[in-house]
Image (cartoon, rainbow, N blue to C red; front, side, top):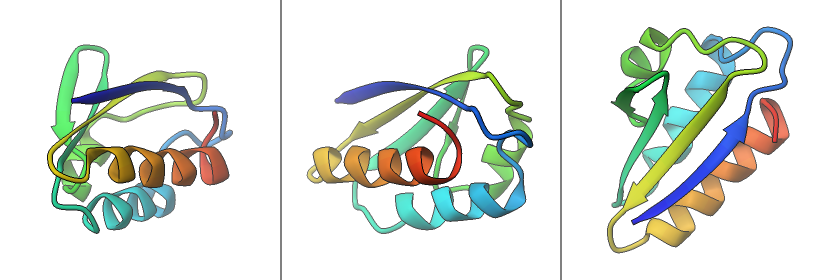
Length: 87
């Protein structure tokens, strides 16, 4: 299992557009990909799950990937976060 922590620096936090980008990217992999915020963990392949977290600016999130392509999944999701949401 891979785990990485990110800080959301986008002014609007994780709103619909970047959440859709994350879900679409996570959906490209066979691995199970999840995101955790404030102790709640959801499937990163579910737009409703991601939106339910209400992740604001300056939030610290953890992304988990487990499966046959977990390394690629973590790298892909990490790129989307760094490009659109933070670091």
